[in-house]
Amino acid sequence: MEIIMKPKKRIALIAHDNMKDEMLEFVRDNEDILKQHELCGTGTTASIIRDRVGLEVKRYKSGPMGGDVQISGLIAEGDIDIVIFFWDPLSAQPHDPDIRALLRIAVLYDVPIATNRSTAYFILNSKFINSEFRRDVVDHSELMSKRKEEFEKLK
Image (cartoon, rainbow, N blue to C red):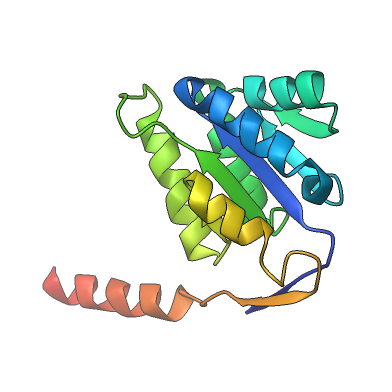
């Protein structure tokens, strides 16, 4: 399946508590690029960006209250083009299964996902950020059918 990302991207911004200052600095450094796109984010991250930088950011629930799951759903529906997710690799998160699901869904749907500052800068400064880009999403239904058949044979 082919998905065409338009020049105006839909970008999700997510940051764990210990990474919010880093996200805020990143957004300030890239405000001119980000304001050209449609932004959304989880809970406090979206509020901080809106209140301290002045960018319009659609706010979803906080991560622990289901925000990561909401973003995952948007990816699956084709409503997110890029995810910038500054997660804290040194702190345990109570909603770790939701975080892992978000990462898995982004990979499954071939959505560019930055989990650190360097990757985020590369994405926002890519030649594709303001142009159309075609993503190829693998149709896993055939693979799933084959696995189901193999499982049935084992019974």
